[in-house]
Amino acid sequence: MKKNMGTTDKYIRFIIAAILLIAFFTNAVTGVLGYIALAVAAIFILTSFINFCPLYTLFGANTCKVKK
Image (cartoon, rainbow, N blue to C red; front, side):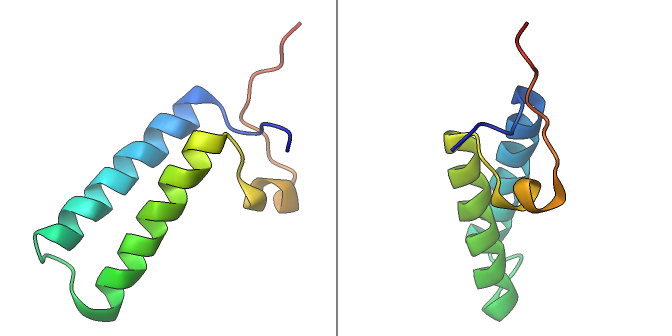
């Protein structure tokens, strides 16, 4: 897998994942929507660790800086 996520994108995903996890564990979001938020948070954390987003390849996006 070729990296397609930059550091800013990774930090934004971590922040969104943290907000979703806090909302889930404080019962601000419950039921099916809570489990969806939990799944999205897990996906954001996973893609941040591996520096690869499958949706970016579908849309041809790349936020990773090019080394010269």
